[in-house]
Length: 593
Image (spheres, rainbow, N blue to C red):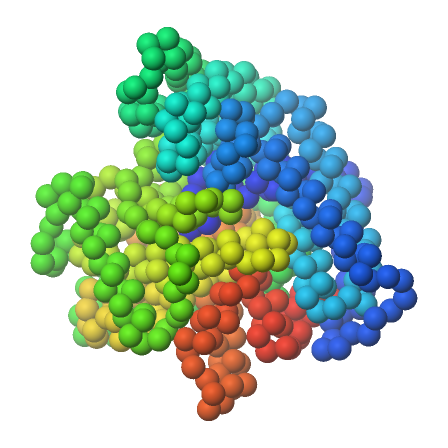
């Protein structure tokens, strides 16, 4: 999921990353972790209860502040208080947000958590990592200044977030959309002022998105306007046309500037390692992550070769029992396989499905999001959503498509369906939304989220859902193979060892992807640093934890219990999950020292 989560376009990139503050180059923040964790840390001087209370107040105030300052992101998360607003991208607003986050991070870093309880110290570590992600974005990535996708994404998500669920009456949603449409031309002017050194690759992706945005505005949005009074409809149409003209003009001016734009610049090894350690809380550096990717790529390429029919790893619609004739039939066929997967999970007691779990639906991918999400994206229930429904958006159906995801979905949609739905993202993120601890509920560690979803693909195969030498089994191996190739691309692209063209080629040769998918994957790696390492890295951590959990439980071990224990605490770094499940702080101590 591009992240998520999804993970899916830059418009839905981690809000705190886009909001990050400026840190003076000479400033060296105190990132030491005095007093590593022991199984029984004694309470030291002072009043731990008062300090913990202060931490929780700071965290809640920060979430409230973030939600108001990023109204489109709030709408995406199911909080519709500010549906009539766009983010303020004026220089003053960006600076004020930067200053606020910087001061909060300094305050949280200065807290002495040595004498706190285990659970309270975990929350301090998590909240600090959340703020570290915010601080990193502006200090290193500078997306407001170099990435036009920020502003095109704001426009597309501003409308998309109002349409995807019927959270209110059509009239109220249309009124909100009209207000946002009216604000888009001025927001895009702010964006152009900020884009002093736009990156050519980012601009090319933004141009493609801008030129594919029309159906979202002209078709999807207008379905809500059928019963509007004539004057309100006219106001909507006028605002829509002006917004589209502004977006197209933004794209045209970007295109004229392309020859003078700077090339994609990697963040470098030091910054990459900083992000792994302080934001993702990984006990690995860039070299170790890259080695993990190479090892897993070699393993899954070999496992493909060991299939009785290695061609099964390359999806082929001609092998399918039936080929859907049109888009709606394709969506229905895709979604119809979900129940058999649920029945398998229940009959094998592989995981507990909570009563509050909503529906999971398959929908068509809006064209505006295709440049960096060629395989589609998952849209789980938002953090504040009252509606528990989740969606997986898949590319426009074409039975002759060379796109890996389309071919795979025609032949057997279950591997990808399991990753995106149940037991993957939809289930895990639905449970995470119900975690009572607010800091943990707000935590969105992509390594855990994508690691879990990828782990479930192979787990279902190993527990018997797919027969040997089947198309589904071949897909599982190819999906893991290209997720392993993602690591090499992400690390080498972001540390400056590879060019963008080398990244695309590696996806095709190493990952076995078609050119369209490979180019989109490489674009995603350039636009969302570290996102591509989440899958295999998280899966490796889960497999490592599974073995330790099995050894600890002995005769009492049950796989379904491990799965329940693993995902009940939300989207947490696996170093912390290991501490919770095994009462062993060794791995998180490696991160914190």
